[in-house]
Length: 131
Image 1 (cartoon, rainbow, N blue to C red):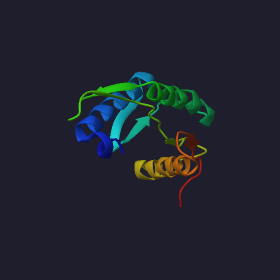
Image 2 (image 1 turned 90 degrees about the horizontal axis):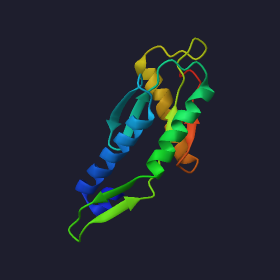
Image 3 (image 1 turned 90 degrees about the vertical axis):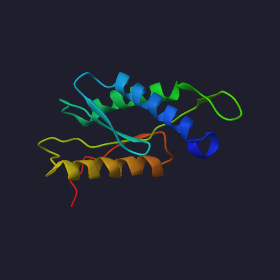
């Protein structure tokens, strides 16, 4: 939507700002990466309970919500704010083990779409084992 409204350069600036916000809110041992388009993956190390993801996810949602990204456009400079994120997660543990990284990402992706279908700007977890 940002690309269509403000142009691709503005969209790139917003993606960069969101990436920085996610990186800032993730813990030092966590891995943050762009998964495609406007989606990111955060691999959170050493959490043993599903509830422990919530505070990290909420910090990320708050940080993105509070962004004010200044972008240039053909009609002048603008500030983009009011951004939201939908977050899906899966817990890899002895109880909810996934056979490989692909299955683990599928489970997190399913949780992400659950958050989007529930109205967006939400956090959903998927503890179930796929298949």
